[in-house]
Length: 274
Ligand code: G3P
Image (tube, rainbow, N blue to C red):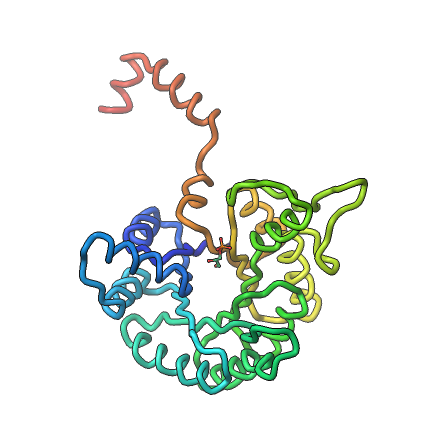
C-alpha cells in the first residue's frame, strides 16, 4: 500500500519525505486554511502560490492533490484547468481534487457536476482525485467518470456512526472495523458498518470489475485503522503526520531497545563499532 501524507504543512511534508517511505501528498482547503492561519498568527507573509510550489518540489516524482473550491461544473472545470496549468509545470505531479457531489442539498441541480467535471478534466488529461466519498456507489460513479483516485473518508463515517448513538470520543480513537454494537445490533450507514468497511467495499467492487482507479483511504485517524485499510486492500492511505509517526511505535519496541542497549558488552561493542 502506498502512503501519502495528508497535510499542507511544509515541515511535516519535508520530514516525512526524509524518512523515505512517502509516496505522495494530499491537501484540501481546510488544510490550506490551517497553514495560512498559522503563518498569519506568526506575523509572516503568506504567499499560498509559492508555498504550494514548494510542496510540489518537495514531492517531485510523487502525486500532490490540490482541491478546487467551486460547486458548479463550469467553476470546477475552470479551476481544475487553472490549478493544473499553474502548478503542474513545477514538478509534473499535480492531481486535481474534485468532490464527488458538490451540492449543499440532496437532489440539487448541481449534484452531478462533480462527476461531469471529472469526465471533462480526465479527457483533458488532468489526473483526478475524487474526494468526499461516503458510499461505494459514489466511488463507482467517480471511477466510471475517469478518476485516477477515489478517496473514501473512513474516519468521518466512524464519527458519524458514533455521534448517532451519543458516544463521546477523541478524533484519534479507534473504531472497530467490524462495526459498533448497540443493544445486540451492529450500527450501519446504509450497509456500511465502518470507515474500513467502506474502503473494503470500494476495493471489492473495483476488483470485481477490474477497475483501474485506485482506492485512496482518506480521513484516517490512527495506526490501527491504517493497518485495517491495508488489509482491506486499499491502494493508498493518506495519513496525518501523527499517524505516520504512530505507525512505528510500540512500547515493547522501546523496552526491547532499552534492554539490548543495556546488555552491550565491551567485547561486542568493539567488533561493531570498530
Ligand atoms: O483526506 C481527507 C482528510 O483531510 C479529512 O480528514 O480527519 O478531517 O476527517 P479528517
